[in-house]
Image (cartoon, rainbow, N blue to C red):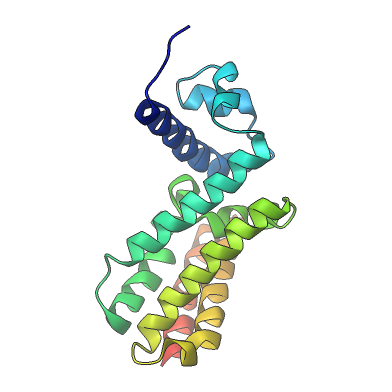
Length: 190
């Protein structure tokens, strides 16, 4: 039996998390079985339990990782409100809508996360809180707490707009929803 270094195991674990994140957002949590997830990572089913206690454990880790990555990307935007406008335009873009596997886990998985166990809900809560804090800091850098309510409203507006646009079969209407969502969000933050 081969013995791997701690670093190798961590790299493999992260690869599983990243591949599962893409698959979950593309096909849903319930639509993604362990064998498919492990195949995506280039591993056998038997290797799964060397990294995770259960699929629920994997889901919680994926949600936490996806949201940490999302918040980290927000840190690369321009400072203050200009960066917030960039975020809105990127988030509510046809490209983001059309590629859920590489996009926001909230818009892709929110309904399923609501049916998950406490560990996944806690991971989501922590990540959502970090996103709201990031938005609040852009709205009111001098006093982010004062902008918390507006940040929650903006976050929910973004996620809901993207979900609605993804659900529409009429491409022109779906694009209109995104465009109006950007305008509504920019009006909301003024």
